[in-house]
Image 1 (tube, rainbow, N blue to C red):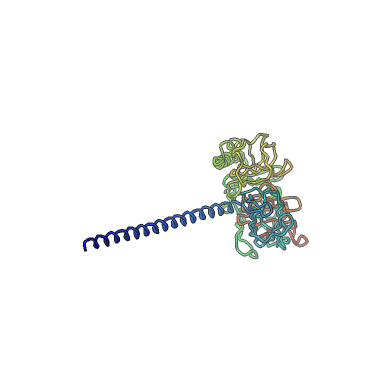
Image 2 (image 1 turned 90 degrees about the horizontal axis):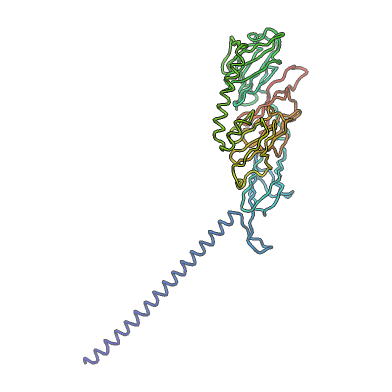
Length: 427
């Protein structure tokens, strides 16, 4: 009986042993399978991540070469939107548009019915995003009157939306100097004018057309110099309020102008402090008539002397402006320097009048007042297009902070001897 019990006990232990062994084998097999699954998922995740990164950097599979090749991304937008985009003459879609293209040189055209077309040529490189964002202007812009004074002379008050207007129609009660400030109210309503001084308080004889205006560094005051018979007289006027008795500063004019010039240089120096130190000294010594873009990142200037502008960012930033630079400044030539990209572009030679060039409100374009038209270009001087070629008096124009184009024009010269301020509907 005991022998039979022992035999049964041994068989039971062997059965339990093999059962446990078999169970452990299954557990080990499950662990291997789970590890394999985890490894496979991790590998797929890594491959997917690499694919996403390569795709984002512009890599695409070339079915012809049967290999992965680098491409560039061309991002084309426009103002207004929904303009047609042509690449090397082929229609590719409407703005806003992103295209993956092989590296190479491309001609990009942006067209919209009723607007001036835009065209530029650029070199696309692998893994680089090139942005094209033109402003398109109407082929037939509208004209809206903003004043009805009859204006003898107009002077833009820089760094503001104000214009100094001289009016003389033979009316002692209205002839005088006015400050006009563009606003965003409906354009068919005449804008309010602030009278600064009556002509009778300044001139007993002569005309405003022979006047000369010089502004203070903060554009809060101006010196008006007027010709009277064989001499000239200068008055100091405030640009913020009416001057019932303008101050005669004929004897102290030069001292005032010198003080204003010193303050102006101080303000420019503060702005130039944000420039790279290699450029700062040259800018202070060699940049004249400097006009900064509204966002303060670029400066339009005339070179006072011939000098080399050193490279600060070497190599150039990836995706920076591709237009050929001019690092050697020639005396009296006009340039634009972009401090963010350390790029310098020649805008014109000495026959270009920097006084007739304005920054557009987006800081990316320049506006030129030419003899028979007003044109706009990219800030590097390329892609120039006419935005107005109608009647223009005294070659006067101004750009407001809202992107309005204001001109001095006379649309009815047979009935009205003097021009007035109009807004050109370019937006």
